[in-house]
Length: 252
Image (cartoon, rainbow, N blue to C red; front, side, top):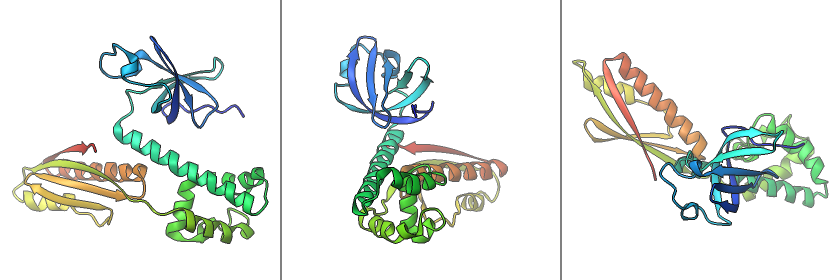
């Protein structure tokens, strides 16, 4: 199947050509080339493209437009934040490790790779966006996560291989927030707003009215989702209790 990336997707590629009008990038996970026009190189004025990208450089870009009939893929470098870049690189590394694991599994058991894809990779892709997410779930919840999804005779060996190959990583995302309440019992309201039972969320007082929030998770995608959900919860609570909140994401 002639597979193309989706619009809005973040992809990793290698710079193969640099022209005055833009850059050609070979996408690592697709047998395709995309183009970054000069206006999508940087948010500032670009006098010389070569000061921003180099030949052979690995770049994370955002897919802006896909036209399969014309074989066109328009990419952007300037619309990728540092956090999105880290997240995409981490996902790419973990997914590559997951594919290597399946290749080793196929070789060890003398099974054609196409059969491994059909019997392991495809069934897991029905539930998980990325292969490594299935393997990390197995690390947390045990081999039972594979039951009913892949052939029973594969489960024990696959699980043992995952245990020897993968380990749960820890990543952190942080934000500072300024929170104010105009109610007579404002201090109690703020405490209620910030209260959480989630072990991955740590809130500290920096000095009233400023607080820091640290999210710890196994991957950036999950950590960002937790931070967004928590900030939305706090903001809504304070809005309902005559207060206001300002979240500022901390870039590493």
